[in-house]
Length: 593
Image (cartoon, rainbow, N blue to C red; front, side):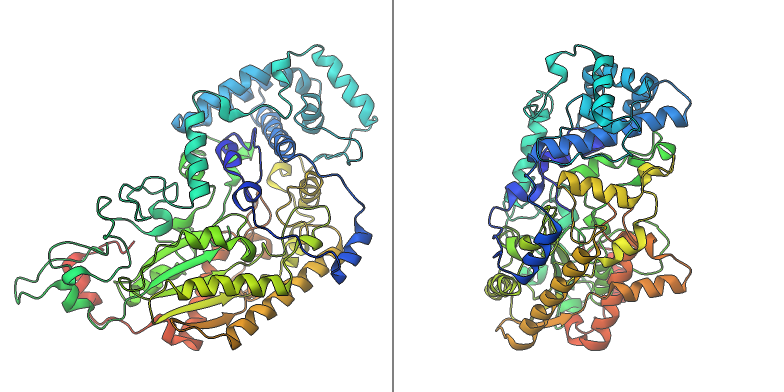
């Protein structure tokens, strides 16, 4: 899913005033696909020419509708006034990142008008059009989440505007309002913008692209720097003099055994073939997650938003819980482990790096791959998992097919990426390429279920939610999250073609510093496994965005990959280190991350 840095900033206010999509400004080199494609001809018959909606306005509208819906439902759940509901919402937010202060400011600016409108039973769509956060431009469809009022739209909107009469200009910011211009929040905006553009940790004293700070691309993503004042000390490098006097590779193992004078790293590590796991992927691999309790009035409490500042600083991703590179256990009760933890248990000297971005695809990998910090001569080999499972076919355009990556473009861009990896990875590395997902699963299992915003009053299904996102042109995957079966089939067919291209590359292309492998992204297999233990397919999808695999699915996918590597590609994992028990006896759980 694609979010701009400003969108991430204001997401704690339930996307209150979000501005732009992430890919639009971070990734400039997305190519335009040739419209002569046979798919374009079919898709053109589905969609008429539709004007492009201003990037800012579409996120203003989405954010406003979500917030007003939450306020309305909070009043309903607590049998309170609208004003009390707004105050309750602000009271739930933490002080960090000025979240509570910003909420009260927004209430001060817009609260009186929202109260007047909601007290007259005006729904969130009409409220946001009245306040001009939503706008229907000439030639554009009317974007709405809830059913259109029984009276004509024009009459309802006129009635609503008469209720608030003559609003102050300040309360109608239109497209020019910029929350990042507020004095107390401008610095945070700039920090987040810097991190997004540079693709490296914000806090990095020695500029080695590793950090002692967890978020803003810190060690939640790249492994923990154990000395941020020495750029030759970082996770994954070969030890300096067997780390007899200091920990140069941040695995927590260093010093000399007093019994025999042999450095512990030499005694326990020599010949064990340490390797790292590096994930190059999109937001699914980084575990993109918007907590349902952030937008579900019946679940909100003072505890709902405790982890919100951390989530925001990680761009609404949770890489520390990722199925591939996660090193923490969230306690969800699934009896499978993160792939990194499993690989670390083979050899306590293994490490991880996560280079995932919302909106990442084969076509914009340049920014992502250049932030990779690897030294062929100094570092251990790595296992690279290339998992761009959706964004080569996913976009929010009214006619999404012409914007999809073609097999020819995929081949060209992936070969550039693999060539770059070959020049930066140590000899003996491995690269595993995942095929694309088949996202037809989403519509088939969710379309008639209620979205979290619709569960209280049974008034918003995923079909309505998808249609609203598509109308605003912010649907993360209009090709699959659509009622149009022809379009869903076209998207699945293109994904299949791209997977075949990936398979051919892995079969026929050779590189000097790594072996190349291909694996199918078999989501249907984990669905079947989940159903065997009594689960339902829809339970594997993030409930708020209705798009990403959730944490359970991410862990099951990691377990599936682990089993495939063990059975089909054991050379990728390497042999088990027989000294793991001794390492634990001497150093305990030394971290490894």
